[in-house]
Length: 495
Image (cartoon, rainbow, N blue to C red):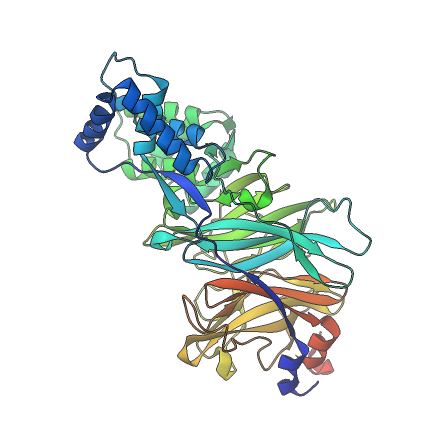
């Protein structure tokens, strides 16, 4: 093992900085509280003359059309949110509909506060590249007003000489409408209800009236029929859970014309309305060696957190799924890129302090975990956790970790897990791989270095990392150099 003080000299920080841009804005519905205010706003617009309305609409388009691809479509959609408040039987021009929509619309700067906690995976499209190059997608946590977090993306190419070139970033960003799943699986839905302690006579009677594959509308109808039964008293808490579960498992779809840097996964469901935090993407290879991308993230509603799962094959269509089980009640889930001995494997941190591992026969359910690493070095005395999904190498599963030490300084370390028995740590760094330097320690949350997942390319580890929760950069280190700095267990300790 090389001297630990040499580690910092072996890692190279790229000059690339991924910075926030407050000019990248989305539109959000903005409906002031109180029915009377809605009525008053609509009434004021209706009193405009056609000439006044036309001039006002011209002003709106002049000020906002260069900030959004189709501002008129977006404000028309927001008009639909309040159209039920129009006076009955009234005829209204398209121009006034758009103005009403604009009155109930606001811009939101998705990354005005911070752009951080990146993860990096191979792009699903590797066509038309020079030999030896790799196209990648990077996800980042974007945070705006009110500390609301969403997921944004960047793309680029790692060239044969290990230089990294990012694709141009669009000036536009777009969200997509949340869609309920086309069909829900009744057996899986019941299992999740049971796990949530919501399987009783109410849920049983609702579920027995719907087919094995049911729609959200069929669920609503079945609940409505049960509510109308005068001889049955519904458990309202269970009814709320039925709707909550259906709304927490949904689909979002972007149009092909929407570039990767334009796509924003913004909080949609009730359990994530205060933010989507720290997505850890991984390219997962299934039993037939086909690949799909998964990401675990933390949903936050302002009070509690809930781990969720995203799945996608093309980064255009995303399915969002609840994770269930007593072992998924904290932050920092990181899925292994393939099954091990026929089971899914995931790293986690149940207790907020130690590194855990868990195994499951079903991707959605995680019931038990065990500690594989506890804080032992001064730079990780407060807590440790993973920094993204493990990377498979010949020597084992390479895991980037984070440690929190005195003054809440975050550093990035690394451990190596046994390939066949990943619950066994076979090597680890005794000193951090990355700690905040003077430039990196200043920011939204000082003294923090953090990553949500790197990748390996041509025996070089590429680590995208956040700097004090405000911006991000990239560091690289040769795999052989990293391994040479790790302390391995004695040979007799290995199985």
